[in-house]
Each structure stands twice: as C-alpha cells, then as structure tokens.
Image (cartoon, rainbow, N blue to C red; front, side, top):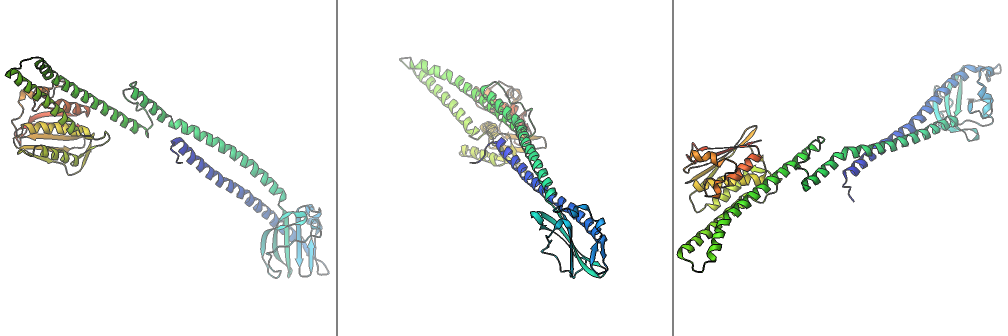
Length: 445
C-alpha cells in the first residue's frame, strides 16, 4: 500500500538514511579497532624480534645461544601469551613459556631465504589465538628463522568490550535522533495544519482569506488559494448581479402580462402590449444566455491563451454573424501569452466584441500587446462611435446603461468588474484607424 502521508514518507526516508549511515558507521568502528589491535601488536613483535636478535650469540660448539638475562620475564612464565622460537637447520630454541608446543606458520618461506617477513594469526598453546611474526635472519653466516608471537585474547576482550559499549551508545543516539527527527517533522508540518484549519475557516466564512505568513515553500500554495477564492467571490458577485438584473428586467413585462390576463376583453392595444412584453422577456433571456455562452465552462485554474483562445472566440463571433458582412480581425504579438483566468478573459473580450459587433458597419478588430508590466487589449469598430458625454458614464461603477437599451453599454458593468478585479484600467475614445469606438484595457502583468 503506497504511503500517502508526507510525515510518514519523510520519517521513512530519514530513518532509512540514518539506519544506512549507522550500519556504515558500525562497520567502520568494528574494523578500525581490529586494525588498531593488529598494528599495535605488530609493532610490539618488531621490537621483540630486535631484542631477541641482539641477544643471540654462538657457543664454542657452534650452536646458537641466548643471553637469558636480556629476555623479558614473560618468556619464562608458562602460557604467558608471549612466545618466541628460533629455528636453524640443526637446532630449535624456544621460550620457556611455550613449553613443548611448536609455532608453525603455514605461509612461512623456506629457511634458505633471507630478509623474509611474514605476519599472520596462528593457533597457540591452550587454544590461545596468536599473532605471529616470522623473520629470516642472517646471523654470522647462518640462516635463522625467528618467530615471535603474542596472544590477542586479552586485547581482543578489551576491544570487544569497547565495541559493545560503543554499539549501545550508538543505538541510544539513533533512537534519540529518530525521535528528534519526528519532532522536527511535526514542527515543520505545523504550517500545513494551520493552512488546513484556515481553509475550513474560509469555507465556513470565518475568514475572508488565508494568512500568507507561512514558510517560503507553502506561501505560493496559500497565495494561489487566495487567488482562486477571490476569483470565485468575484464570479458569484457577477452572477448575483446578472440574476438581479434579469429579475428586475422581467418584473415589469411579467406584471403587464399578468394584468392583461385578468382582463376579459383584450383590445388590439392590449394584444400589442402583450406581444411587446413577451419580446422584452425573450430579449432579456437571450441576452443572459449569450453572457453564459461568452463566459464558457472553463475551470478556474486555466489561463487564457493568446492567440489560441482569442481566435476561438473570434471564430464563434464569425459564426454568429455569418449572415452579415461583419469582418472580425486580430493582431497578436509574436510570442504566446498566458494571462489571467480563462473564464474571466472570455467574458471580458466576449462582451466587448459583442458591443462592437452591434454598432460596427463592416469591421471589428482586436489588438493585443504587452510590455514588461502590462497587457493591453484594444477593441475597435467602424461604427458611429460613442458620444463624449456617454463615455464617462459607461465606466461609472453601478451605472448600467445596458439594462435599459442594447448597444455599447451591454455588459460594460461586467467588464468593469473584471478589470477592477485585476487592477486594470479602461479607456474609451475614438479609433484613429476605423473611426468608430475604441475601448482600451490595460491589465497589470
């Protein structure tokens, strides 16, 4: 079963890493004392070999002899753990501590070779483990094999005791380190728990936005959640405004129809009023359906793409106005642009293009440009333009000319809300090229 918890995953990887390092550390500390033990004993054996070699002499009968007063006392105590053995083709001298036991090196070189040194572990008397050093000496023309050995049992016992203590201490430190790691992980993941709590408070309405006072790795997530929350609030507000506008627009014609339905004798004037009321209702419904169509069904996380999505929008308007002579053209930068929320930009451009198409004679043009700090959108038409006195009214918040008559005012309240949401500006003037209205929108990058 896969691990889905970040805390468990971090704990697993950190614990695994610590275990691997611990095993390597224990292996190193196990090998190091053994090397130290062997090096220490080897240096002692070299000194013993030198002292024994200096004690050698030749008796009058030609046999080798040792000056007993120069030998260490440990060589005279049985099974003391310190031994030597001198071997020539005709004679063998051993320490008193060795007794009848004889030292044998399986890998020892023949006695005829000189300057050969071999160090290896061999069995000793009373089941002792010995570290033995064999050296071939050339003493006054005679080839002498000298083996000096020393037990490793005592030193090995001390080393094993040290290893046990060290292993127990290391395991204790390992447990302490794992506990500290788990505590650090819990402390490090507390901002995520706070983020989860804030999200629940955001859902219940106790918070308007999530605090972004978070670690650097989590702060972008909180910022994105706040952006999506603000986007949803903006959409809900626009939907409420649209529903309010629709309800307000339907209220009068429905009241008229209700009054006419209660009259027994309907005159021609009443019938005309009823037809006009029904047409008004149909017009309002068509307008809201067009807004929904322009907004699309995109998710909040999608970005609007220039020129791909803009071309799709223009293609939709060409299809809507295919029976007219309207031409929809566009100018885009050479590089692709990803900006804002897809639904917002569809609704923004859709309302502006719809306004332009109602007043244009033949041409509607969309121009997209960008700088390092802003995105510029321009919609121009070759219609009669907007009088100077109405330009300021179109951008006044809360003034909805489109609720009374269709024309350049249609959807401008929605456009204004979207532009304000992105912190942009709207400018309305006359198009120098097409001579009609030009609406310019600057949105910060």
